[in-house]
Length: 225
Image 1 (tube, rainbow, N blue to C red):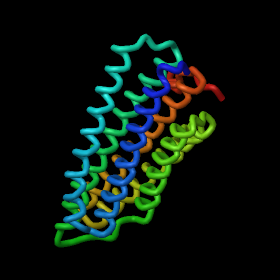
Image 2 (cartoon, one colour; image 1 turned 90 degrees about the horizontal axis):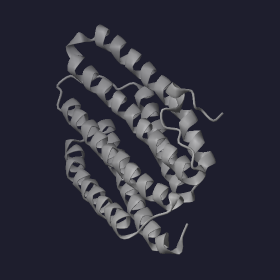
Image 3 (cartoon, helix red, strand yellow; image 1 turned 30 degrees about the vertical axis):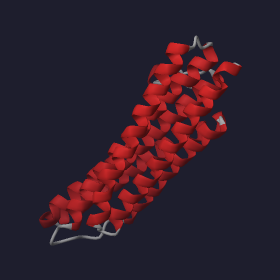
C-alpha cells in the first residue's frame, strides 16, 4: 500500500471496526431481548441502530474523499471500495437486529407463549460467530480465516432449514400460537441473513488480500477450492 493511503486506510479501518463492534453489540442485544422476552431491551435496539446508520454515512464520506482527493493504485482502490461494501453489509446487519427486536417485542406481548426451540439458540450463536470471524478476518487481513467463514455458511443454511422445519411442526401442533411461530421463523431467516452478510465481508477480505473476486463464485463456477 502506498504511503499516501496509509492514513486513509487506518481511518477507514477504524471506522469499519467501530461499526462492526456496534453491530455485534446490537445483534447480541436483539437476541437477548428475544430470549429474555424483554420489551424494553427490544426498544433500545431501535435507537442503537441509528448509531450504525450514522457511522455508515461517515464511512461514505471518507470513501468519497479518498476517491476525490487521491488517485489510488489497484491495491489501494480495492481497500477503499471494500470498506464501502463492508460498511453496507454492516448497516444491513443493524437493520436485521432491529427486525429481530421487533419480533421479540411481539412475542413477549403474547398471552400464550411456547418455548423457543433450542435449535434457534444454536443458530443465533452460529450467526454471531460468523460475523465475529468475518470481522476478525478483516482486522487481521486473514484470507484463510475469511475462507472458513465461507465454508461455514452452508452449515448455517442447514441450521436455518432445520429450525424452520421444527417451527412449522410446532405451528401445526399449536395453531393457537401461530403468530409466535411465524415471528420465530422470521427470526431464523434474519439470523441466516446475518451469516450471508458475514460471507460478503469475508469475500471482500479475500478480494483485498489476494485480489481474487469470489462474488457469485458458486453460481458462476469460479470457486477456488
